[in-house]
Each structure stands twice: as structure tokens, then as C-alpha cells.
Image 1 (cartoon, rainbow, N blue to C red):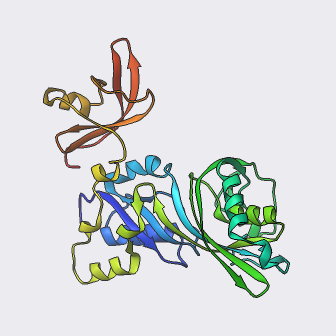
Image 2: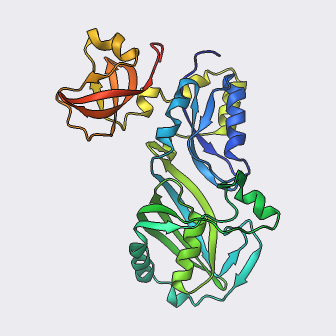
Image 3: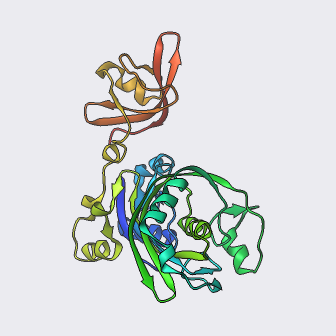
Amino acid sequence: MSNINGVLVIDKPAGMTSHDCVARIRRLYGTKKVGHTGTLDPDVTGVLPICVGNATRLVEYLQELPKRYEVVMRIGSTTTTEDASGEILEQAAVDPTTITKERMEELFGSFLGEMEQVPPMYSAVKVNGKRLYDLAREGTVIERQARKVTLYELTLHDIRVEGDAVDVSFTCTCSKGTYMRTLCVDLGRALGYPAHMKLLRRIKSGPFVEGESIPLEQLEQQAAEGKDITQKLVSIPQAISFLPSFQVKPERTKAVRNGLATALPGVTAEEGSLICLFSGDELLGIHRVCRGDKGLFAKAEKVFPAEV
């Protein structure tokens, strides 16, 4: 295959790293230009958008977008990794009468908005060039700097008693870099119990949703059967359709492709925001909205070749 450009929305299976998925897609599409838009831990399943070809230039924009997860929190024990893969550190019998729908919804409401979160030791965050999970496996625990994250939505789905423990199922929409494992620990602490994340599935990443994802094994099976798997790619213009667009006059098309700034008459976008410049259905580039003496103009960030 050649000249393959677009975003593949994978339903990542458990037991694989995001990097493993990227390596498999490189082989399937015969290109080295492949990159994912947000790491999922090996045990986590769900939506993993993977950019192929010129779409790799979209990674920095797509990875910044909010994510949505389905979460099962186990109240009654904490683990070394803050999820079900770790060894139990602390256990406590849970009184199920204290974990009510009303209490959980009130607690969820108090967690919404911007908050500071300390990354877990078992995470891919780098400190002095080394991944935290590598340090954790060596038995080293270091102080981690808190990061600001935002929780946009927390919706309770189910409360289920499991012996001395209680499982709480909910969905969470959050900003990039939010750790669901740490959120579960913090929610449990607020309830007065040890807790950890039992299960996690990502159901949305930016504009990409679970319903449009394809299991990796299914994609590989289709490729083995000789089917055209390029049809599974979301086009670059469609992948960034969440951004506002502006139609460039035909006589300005070449100038825009050459990276020159162009005026944005009639545009009311916020200064510093992103905008896509088009000539008909053809994407010319992703630009930053700037203000000059004559009003708003577009400054090129990414210019795309004619074949996109």
C-alpha cells in the first residue's frame, strides 16, 4: 500500500499496549508513519484512534481532546497498582448501607471541575527520562508532581454488593491525562474506604466513539482475506471536522499551500484558536487564528499536500 492517510479507530483488546497496536497497524498498512492519540494501559480496552500516513500530523491536536470511560470501582481494597492487576495493600469490609445512590451522586458532583491529581507510580509518566512504572517495578517510589485535570461528567450506573466489597459502575468524561485508577482511590478515600479500579473501558476519544471502532483481530482477519482495509480509515478532513472551517478563494489556494498567511473576512473565531482552511472539499491546512491591523488572519501550522 502507498499514500495511505487517515485515522483508524481501533477497539483495543486487553493484554496489549498501545505501542503493540501501532506496530501491528504498521505491518498491516505497510508504513512506518503510524502513531496513536492517547495511551491505554494493557488491561484497558476500548477506543484507540491510530493515525496513519499524513494523519500522524493530527496527533498533537487529537490527543488533547476529552476522553470518556466506563469504570467499575471496587470499594473495599487498595492495590499496589491502583487497579485489579496489583497486589492487595489494604482491605476493609464495606457496610453496603453507606454506599447509596444519593451519596454517590453527591460525591460525584463534588469531584466535577478542575482538580489536582498525582500520577500513580505504575504509569507511563517520565521522570528524569525514566518511566514511573519501570521505577515502580524496581521497588523505587519517588515523589510525583500533581497535575491539573478536569472532570466534565460523572454518571452513576450501578451499585452492586460483592461479598464484603461493593462495586460501583459509572462513566466519566475527563481531560487528557486523567487517571481513572487514581480517581477510584480518591473516591474511595472520600467514602472512608480503601478502593481501586476494577475495570476500565474507553468509549470515546475526542470525536471518535465506540460504535465506529473495529476490533484489531477483525481488521487483521479482513486483511488476511484480501479485503480493502483502507476503507476503515477516517479521512483527515473528517477526523478534524470538530474544528471550524473557512473556504479560501481559488486564487489564494497556492499561497496557502506555500504557508503564507491569509485574511479571514467574516470569521468571528477566538484569537489563538485553530481553524481549517479548505478549497472546496480539499483540506489546505490547519491554521492558528491571529489578529492583525486589518483584522483576523490565518497563520499556517500544518499545510497538507494536494493528494490528502
